[in-house]
Length: 202
Length: 213
Image (tube, rainbow over all chains, first blue to last red; front, side, top):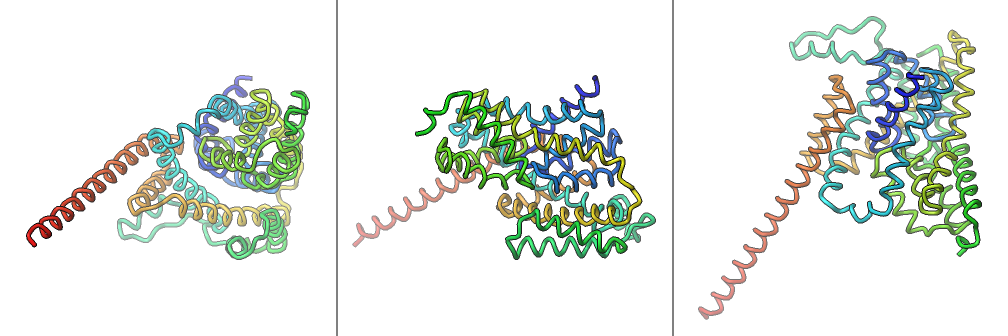
């Protein structure tokens, strides 16, 4: 029960901090559940995001339900989902009338500018997290790159290498997204099929 | 307008069912829902105008929270007040909640050593990497307007890699944004003033020139 209350407030926090859409949840969630509480490993988190992407529904909600379930079962899932929507309902119900009038004030403009810059950086950070689970076989070892500043060769952890199938699928997705208007669902299904076929090369 | 002919209870039911349908069918969420929302609420039921929808889209991306729920709450609020917002939000939550619960309870029964299953997940992860990268680059192009802003993004990025908590970064970004916007408007005002003075100067010198003739 206690656990569910904690989950509820954690997801309230994520919701309030989530400027710029569902992808912003990735750095927030990994910092909380992978690095600090260690209820999930990085590869579990990766699978979770894959499931959240291919099932219908907003990515943020899917992820919340899943993290809640892994943490504390059915009620955990319920607490996490409700936590994610509660602040939105509060803000929405109180601010709909006023916010258009406030849009050009210094306070709102400054907040948006600052949070947007941070959001761009954090989404790029989310990319590096995902690179460590797809294009590379392990989490990118930033600590070992510190050796470059001392003009030494970085010592890479064992098993850290580039995955050929990962590079192929990631590259193909980027090209298809930029050059065609294929819906993301089609891209994801294609990637899933390609992943099964190329499974030996990851 | 049809809005008067629909009773309150019917409007709430419509909101719940519509958002249930939207999140049950639309994969990807967020902005992908927009065309469906337009079809249901603007074209079919005429409960809001296209301009209102456009205003709302801008709004849902500025307030915090995930875009799908923001949209549900604002449309619900617009059509049926606070109960409407609740109905729409719960409608949006129900399908993903049920689907993910079913999948999550099946997950432990899947064979974790099945090569093809692992391949499927790895494939989707690789595709998601590409998608986040493209989304991030688009956001970068829309948001970052100067070299200074680019440097700020870089600093935030490096701090995130150095395991500074993302929550802390966002909280720091707010006062930074205030200082930045204040500095920018002051600089703009100064430039404008300098501009005005120089144009006054040139006007005066022209006047002097004409006097001399």
